[in-house]
Length: 317
Image 1 (cartoon, rainbow, N blue to C red):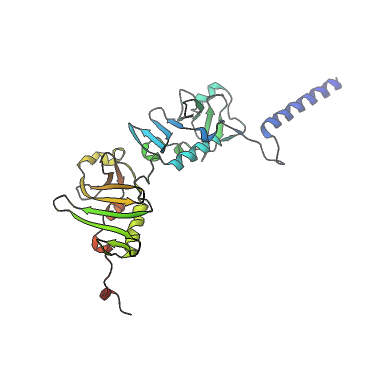
Image 2: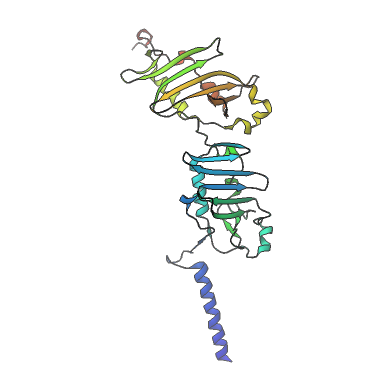
């Protein structure tokens, strides 16, 4: 009898050790070895799809970079944001599951029928690399998640708000920013019949010239810096501005720019009313973007603010 008890005790001990080796293997003197929720190579991802049951967002990588598609629109996505999310998904670590049955997926909202986010990753051939679901949150900065390939549900370091479901949330907010190597800018202010035009040109010998005369270099560089750091809020069609009928905004001026390798035109539109709101579009007017009042009001400065001082205007010593 005692011998049998000893054998059973040994077997039980072996089972405990085996479990510990699987879940808490110690390869660095005590740290828990974690497994990944899904296994895929981030560099092979060419498409990321998100769904919340009512909306869908599709992020696709092409030769130009990442594009975001939602609500019937396709625009340039923030590549750094998308790449960071792909990397974060690839690095999701798991240890002990919080549930291991298929029935529990419904309770934690990570089933194929009930989820808060469904996340699919594909390569450039359309082959599925991974499919996972996120659901309820067990605490701050954590969410319950499940791979479509398994029943186990885990708590992982992720939050559903990090997987937003609008085009604006993934949009490259710097898509209208001007390049650093600007050579020339032509500004037109006002309607066609009353327009005023002035030009800034970078002269290698004299610096920036305003209509051929030396400009206030500090003022010009400050203005150019604003254009190079320009950020939009979002697509006009996606914002509250839609209620004011963005098509009725009037064009108040344009800016034509030329760099060493590129050229383009940006058009400023303003609302008619007590509180001015502004949109920027490219010269084809097909895509309008919301910008802040500060950006709108400073986009087409007064020519006088950029003029260089004459010698007799310099302050005396």
